Amino acid sequence: MREPDMQKLDALVGRLVGDVGAAMSGALVVLGDKVGIFKAMADGAPMSVQDLAKKTGIKERYLREWLSAQAAADYVAYDEKTDRFSLTPEQAMVFAEDNSPAFFVGAFEVVQSMWMDEPKVADAFRTGKGLGWHEHSTCLFRGTERFFRPGYNSHLVNEWIPALGGVEEKLKAGASVADVGCGHGASTILMAQAYPASRFTGFDYHGPSIERAKAAAKDAGVADRVTFQQGSAAEFPGRGYDMVAMFDCLHDMGDPVGAGRHVKETLGPNGTWLIVEPFAHDHLKDNLNPVGRVYYGASTMICTPASLSQEVGLGLGAQAGEMKLRKVALDAGFTHFRRATETPFNMVFEVRA
Image (cartoon, rainbow, N blue to C red; front, side, top):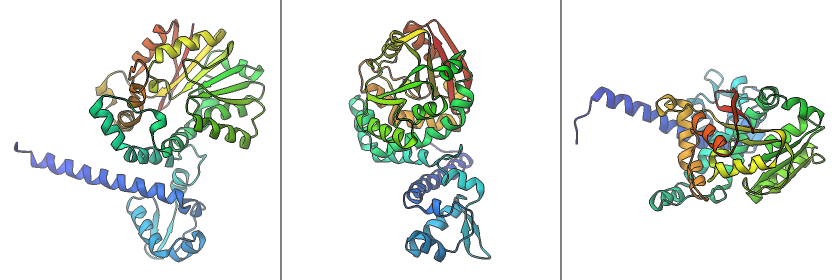
């Protein structure tokens, strides 16, 4: 064994203690969401364990331990003088308010699926085979929607679509849109609510997600202008679309160039391919940061295995960067590729023939 630098070792172990605590806190966040503790505390009123037990129907002893762990993580506020617990406005936005721009519980559900599916990914590592999206635990599908939906709510209609040349005007007047890789339909439904004169079709190869999207569209009152169909990115039906959108899914595809060629065939004159992808720089050294850490982790366990499970298996990964994405679009036959806007978590590209 090589001789370590003890100061560096101590610093690393210190970081690992924090990481282990964060991993454990993540499981507790999912638990608290599932059994309704965060919702019960959403109004911010300080509560004793006894009062919260009455409100939630959860055994006091379990609540005391859960609350103590969350207080240690600074995910819940604790007043030692009154022995009461509460959620600050910021904590409520992150843990209790599903539609807030800062809601973060979905991210922990994605992490939950990574732990649950680790044996499958380990087998893929050993064999070199892939692991399809549909082969993951169901918490991944729910978590993905809940993770990305706050960002879509905040940015899609207010910033991303207006950043595309001429697209917002078409949508307001009445356009035809395909949302490919739509999952549970969060992005499709949001656009349909904002642009009632347009018609939207969501496509996803995952049948259960399509059924969930249909139910969500009905609940949202937009079923009259939104349809959902099972279909792959390389074969989805229709022609003459004014816009084809792909939200955080192009990098998951085995053959993104082939999918792009099909998009080109389905677009009408002056149609736009909207690509939204996880934020990434082109070089690894520039992605060695907290956001890159999250996306590389998800890409290792979810995105890259999904791509490698399909034909071609390009394996772009969730940190592909603009340069690789541009090459995909140009290889698919497009000539116009522009970064229209960005957020700390996403890059938005306008692509045209």
